[in-house]
Length: 192
Image (cartoon, rainbow, N blue to C red):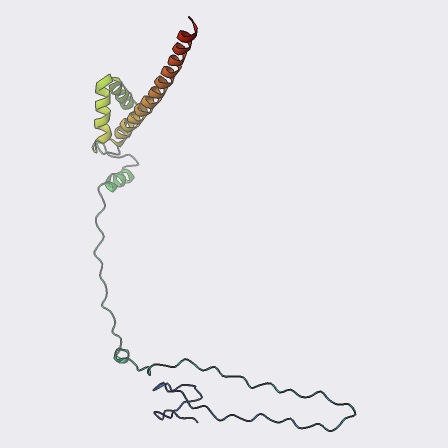
């Protein structure tokens, strides 16, 4: 068994000492076996070629010996159990839905989820048909956070339709003016 020349530790066939990192002294080379000559035969045999012994690759040198750390020798302690806070109460928006489930699928009267009847939509349309008042009422209803959600969504839809109608009207007027100017320019230049 080989021992380290620096610290005397057992090497166990390793190229470097695991305690101090010193390179182990190379072992004495083992002589290759010599092939014995075969008895003469009528024909000459081809010469025997011996392969070179494999070269062992040395590991890179270690700067210093690896020592076990002090914290590795201490036993691991279990972590304290983590306690989580209780869940928060349900949000107010979920309460009407719970009431709907308990009340047979209808939301309670006065809640934002209350169903708005067909006559209410007729009334909304009549109010919004008034030229300036309807526009102001639509803005107020679209921006409000109280009242039925159906009314708020209807007011928002009406505002979007009015903006779309305004864009289409501006495009039509612009195209009409362009056509009118071209017609007038053509008639006045060539009719005299």
